Length: 328
Image (cartoon, rainbow, N blue to C red; front, side, top):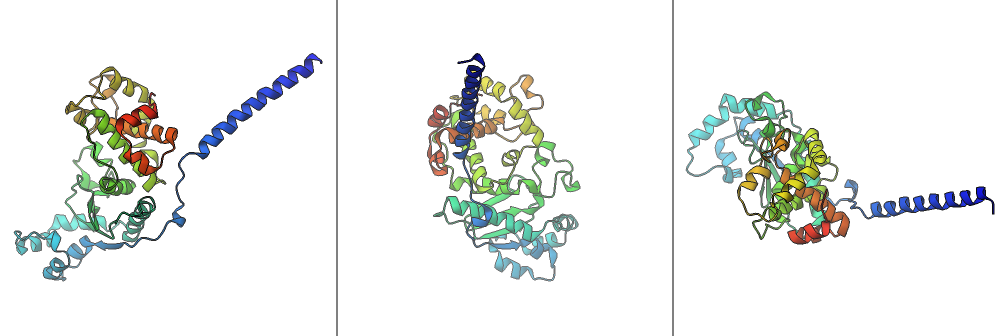
């Protein structure tokens, strides 16, 4: 057999080997999580009420009528005179005017979509059937609240990063005050229904719990960009991706995973301008980097095990750490 023919045969088998590699990775990708199309989701009932429009928009509506319809918004100890004064307050009216640019029908459709996905993955869960938007004096600590049969939305915390009403609010908080993060806030509000509270107090327990919560976002709002789930900017997400290995090495080298040091929450899990390594990593780092690491660990676990969402949410932190083989 000629040398030229032998070379061609070897080339053929090398090509074939490369083809099998392509096929192998194609099969892996076929096992990746797929979500139902929005058009295939079941309808869910949702009554949307704009409380701010009723309270601040039509001042001729008697306060007693509003109180009768929404008694849970009016503590008994607060005199009616304060509510009447608040309805006509110039700053409150200015805040109300700012929210008029938000389409209520668009808001309702986005809330409904999240609830549709939640119903798909958790069909036995009794979900909220009413969404109520209201003004909360820009209380960004409670942008969405799961109140059993109701979902409360602080509509004045979704006006946009550059809105003048947010002047004086730190940038790292202001970056979240946008409609881009509406679905994320709704899912975070609903998450305690589906994500078990951690049974332990270690740093691993905490980052895995956050990872489960953020993985839930992938299922209930699959159309969002990755950085929207954790409410990062695209730049913050890029930093986390670029420094992932260094962050993980810091956690391992300093033996943080099984630590119960309460300061770790403040340094790596709570909302802040940056994460606190007390090193060069602090520069340009986003806050809550421990949440981000937990999210990546859960994604690895999902890909390696192929488990269902409910199985993943029930898995222990130790099992997730072991089976994910997370080691960027």
